[in-house]
Image 1 (tube, rainbow over the protein chains, first blue to last red):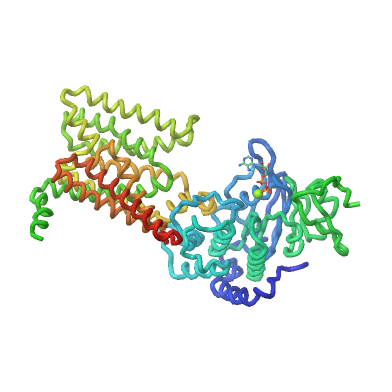
Image 2: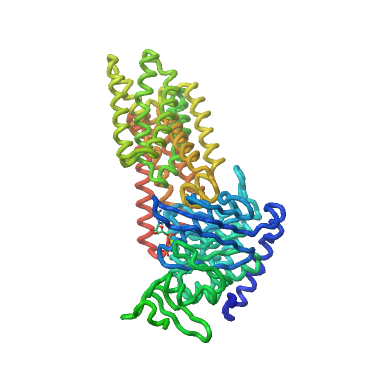
Length: 302
Length: 288
Ligand SMILES: Nc1ncnc2c1ncn2[C@@H]1O[C@H](COP(=O)(O)OP(=O)(O)OP(=O)(O)O)[C@@H](O)[C@H]1O
Ligand SMILES: [Mg+2]
């Protein structure tokens, strides 16, 4: 398995931030002991079916996650990735099936952080980056609670980790798309979640920012945080994640990239709209966005 | 200097002016505070409708009491709270667009209020008071009610600051945190309703929307922080209440109109100053 490695040029800065996060972040395993039922896997999804007005978006999806896994969720557009995340986050009710987070029902869990694909937030809202990141702490403050010094520390630390320290006081209507995305990741970090669901956090970012975020994901795994990332870059999914989940309404496959990205499965998921490259022993899928002129489904797999 | 002090002290010789000033300051601040959310969530039309919809309730109270005004606050309060809950329900179940539904029902209620009042002979003075306010007629009992209910609104807005903020900014986060969205939506509507009733005597129902919207909109011109916006809006509304009443006293202008016009002038001033500042230093953002 290939693991997320920050590029050497950034390793120094990242290393320092990693320590910062470590000192702030209470070990999930320490919290798990008192908050969760022992001996359960962090996430257990069984027979999950979701319908929108009768139309199937997810069909009988079952899987389990172990603590500290970094899982890529891939699949074609409309494959149900966002739907899966919404249901796990408790924003959407499933039609059938069960979800258990450490043995509990989803929703209202401060141990799940969800970064939506397109955050439907009011960008004209009077708030700066730090204000939004502080919202990640609200679940821990409780009713009538106010931010304590620890909350401010967490906010500052999370903002530094995503590299927005200079912009902490900037109003949110003056951020670029990539900066907005990082702000929401910082908010998820501030939440000190044990399970993070990130819906396409890499989409629309330049290569440097993508690497930064992948480095953060690596740090999270070191901390024992479980992360599910929906994405479209199959190459990154294969290279930087522990397991891959191929989703097209049904769960087509889940496992290591070698197990999942087989020609048959990729054709089943994407049809011909995929370029596969033979790289040594393994097949590498380069892009799922476009097929080359004249390429027939399966042609390149022969 | 002393002429200036005399000018300031002039109206304060009259107890009714002192009561009026206190009422204007309190009502303005409370309205502006809930007005922050009215502006941020685009509820201005709803706030206007809510204010107008009180009229039939107040009219019934007026008829029942035979023209006495002591109990109008309670009639207004009951109507406003019921109406705000009704609005919440309509926006859930309505098959028409929400703003259309609000328009239909509340223009109707307003008309009903006027119709009821018009059954009384010589109703025009009292109607004018209800529509445009009668801040100089504020009694000590009215003042006490204003302080009590206005204070309650302020306390609730502060107590549930986090919840209102997250619900307004990011409903999805609110859902993952299991913040009871519906409960807080209704609570906000009720708080707006109470603020409207508290200000009923100051500016009247017809001009109410200005008190909800203008100071908050002015504050939004100068800040991008929610707490700062709230404090600024309340301060500017209170200030406008004072200035408006002095204006009314010395220039003989209707008090409600004078207060609202002061709010509007303040908005224009701030807007102008900001545009000017931007032209002088275009690269620098005035918001921080
Ligand atoms: N709110 C909704 N109402 C009705 N149908 C929906 C809704 N949201 C999603 N769907 C449908 O459910 C299916 C799965 O959508 P989903 O957003 O989960 O896919 P996705 O894998 O995230 O796609 P993408 O890669 O484009 O983000 C699609 O067919 C979509 O049209
Ligand atoms: Mg999606």
